[in-house]
Image 1 (spheres, rainbow, N blue to C red):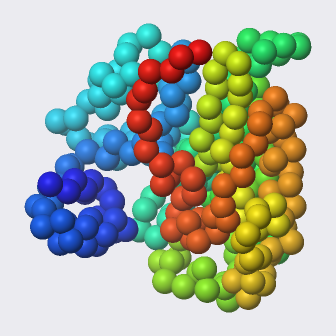
Image 2 (image 1 turned 120 degrees about the horizontal axis):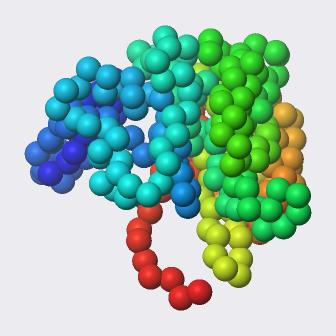
Length: 277
């Protein structure tokens, strides 16, 4: 049986239908929209994108908070990211959002507790600082919109925020923008996978230029006219994570995944396992 969310019909249902046909499976639709990209789980907190509250504000038969607690326990503080009660500020095609990008894992990365120094013990978050080749940004995705989210996060007091560049690609003549239903494309390196143990800290970092990847030809300028800015973004993000004490494993190039609305974390699934520290 293939499972799809009713909230994703505009973008995902055709793919689910195709998969079901290949697998000779039935398609079941669930009415809730518990989307993992809007949930970031820390050691004593859970960041939840305000869009989840938007999806469920009229769903009398689904208790979002109870569902989150059933998955992650009741000991963690649940923190809403974005304007939980305001009017959606961003429009991704037919998809409204109360955040600069609908899924918070596209502009927030969890980087663990800071081990030493003046901020020792506080939790480090990487949060996107938007860039654009021509100074234009999509509705709801301006630098000020990102700053508003930062202000809310910092008001909690337990977090330290490091801003890292993410690039909006307004290159309307690029093949990446074909059939995008007017949804903005963000080259986001925040969509990471991090592995933190007692003896190592590793980040699998999305990169969008091929300059630092062996065996890959560079993306043609006709595909991304803003390629120079993309290269700069890759270099800066690698440096920032290394300065935070992480070994960086670049993964990419991710440009064509970005054109589908996500990058590395969006195409990965977490499998629980027993680790021997």
